[in-house]
Amino acid sequence: MKQITRINHVGLRVRDLALARAFYEKLGFEFLGGPMGPEPVAIVEHPSGVNINFILNASSDASPTNVLMDEPAKHTGFTHIALEITDVEAVKRQLDSHDIAITESVEFEGAMFFFVRDPDGNVIEFHKPAS
Picture (spheres, rainbow, N blue to C red):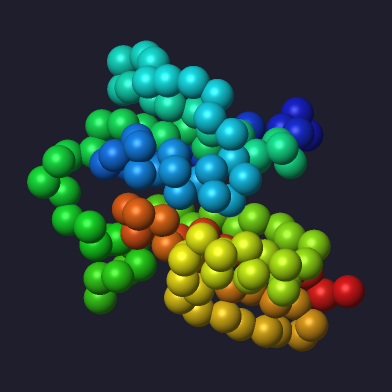
């Protein structure tokens, strides 16, 4: 479909709005509003235009395990979000200053990828394309 122009937002189910909000604010996202709506939803947006809707209906007794990434059975679904970056070392320093651990790092054909987990175990990739 040629009418699709970009990803508008990513929906991310979280257990605790305060924890999710604090984590994503460390990544530069700004809180726009919520909770609102029947789910309910809260919204954060990065100055780059990346928008995340926190879906606030996670079961309080839900396992902290990421069923798409941490279990032997490979379930279908979105496994992570990839955020493109311009400066690997600057991002790593910022993550370190907020005590956000890098869980994996890969270099492939000049591109650099590294991964972190949010408080709910959701995977975020930082992606620096090859020059």
